[in-house]
Image (cartoon, rainbow over all chains, first blue to last red; front, top):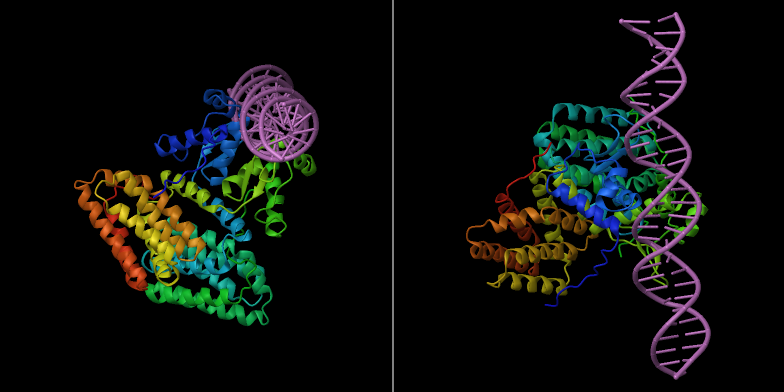
Length: 243
Length: 243
DNA sequence: CCCGGGCTTTGGTCCGACCACATGTCCTGT
DNA sequence: ACAGGACATGTGGTCGGACCAAAGCCCGGG
C-alpha cells in the first residue's frame, strides 16, 4: 500500500507555540484553572514574538480551553478552562452554513444522539433537572408564547435533558448539533400555517417525553424523541445539499 | 423564571471582525472556495489593524473554514474551505486531556455513533470503500504488524467505514471521537500481555464486521461493533474522571 | 522557443508603543 | 485610627510600521 505523504509546512511559529502548550496539557502539567504567565513574560521565554504567542492563545481560546482577562488581581491573565460547548457550537454552525453537512446528516445525527440521551436520562436524570424541564414545557404550553421564544425554550429543553443524561460528551454534541440548525428550525416554525396547533402538538410530545423519562421508560422515550425529531425536520427546507 | 444575564464584553475588535465575516458566511455571500481580500487591503476596509484582522482569521482557521497560503497565484491568499475534521479532532483531544469528558462518556459516544455508522454502511457503502477496508484488515492481520501501526490502521478502518456511511457529520464526529482516545488505546495495547493473540482477536472481529456489512446485515454489524468497542475500552485505564 | 533571474504579491513575524481597565497602594483629610 | 480618593502598576487589547520567505509572474537573454 502506498504510504500517504502529507505536507509538512510546520514553519509557522504560532503552531509551534501551540504544540508546546498542547504537550503540557497532554502531559497533565496544565490543568483547568491554571494560569499562564503574562504574555510579555511568556513570549521571550518561548523565543517568539508576542504576536505569535497571542495567535496561539487565540486558537486555544476558540477551542474553549482558555480564557483571558485584562486587569490585575486573581482573575486576570490567561487561564485554562473547560468550555467546549461554545466552541463546538460555533464550529458546527459555520460548517453547516458552508454546506459541509446536509440537513439529512444533521437529522440522523440528532436522532442517534438524542435517542441515547433520552435513554440515559430515564436512568440517571436528577429530579431537579426534570423539574426544570417541566417548567420549560409549561412555559412552552402557554398560548401567548411566540415562535422565537418557543424555539429558544425547545432548544433549552433538549439540551437540558442531554445534560442530565450524565454524559458530558453526548450532551455537548447534542447541544452543538441542535444549535447548528436553530436558525433553520426558527424559519420553518415562522412559516407554519397554524402556529398554535403546531406548538401544541410539539409540546404534547414534550410532555409525554418527560412523563416517560420520569417513569424510567427509556426505550419508549427514545422512540418518541426520534418521531418528534423526524416530524419536525420533515417540515424543514434544506438550504444545503451534501457535497 | 429569572432571566439569564450574561456578560456583554464585546469590546474586542477581533470578535467584531469575526462576527462580520461569519454573517457573510451565514448569508451565503461567502462560500467554500471563495477568496478573501489580502490582509493589507481588508484590514483598513474593516477599520481595524492588521493584527486584529489576523486574529479573527486565525480563529476561522482553527475552526477549519479557512486556509491561508502566502505567495502569488490562484491558490494564494485566504480561502474559505470545509475541513471540520482536524478542528474537531483537536478540540476533542484537548478537552479529553483536560478531563472535560470521562472515558465512559467517550465510550458511550463511540458506541452510539459507530452503531449508526455501521448500520448505514451496510446500506450505502460503496464497494471500493469496502475493498479499501478489507485491505486494512488484511494488513492488520499480518503477524509482523506492530502496536503503533495496528492502532493507526484500526483508526483508519473505523473512520473509513464511518465515511462510507454517507453521513458526513457522523463521520466527522466518529473520527474525532476515535482520535481523542487514540493515545489511550495505544498505551493500552502496548501493555497487552499476549499482543499477537489480542491483535488476532480484534482483527477477527474486524473481518466479521466487514463481512456483515457486505451482506447488508446492518443490525448484526451494529451489535458486533458495540461488543468490539466495549471490549477494547474495557481494557483501558482511565486517566480522567468526569467532573 | 526556452529558460533563468529579478519583481511583485502574499501571508508570517517581529518590535515598540499606546490604550483601557481593574486592582492594589499609599497619601491625605477628618 | 479610619475612610476616601488620587496615583501607580500590571494585564490583555490594539495599532502601525518594518522586514522576511516563498510562490508565481514577467521580461530579457540565449
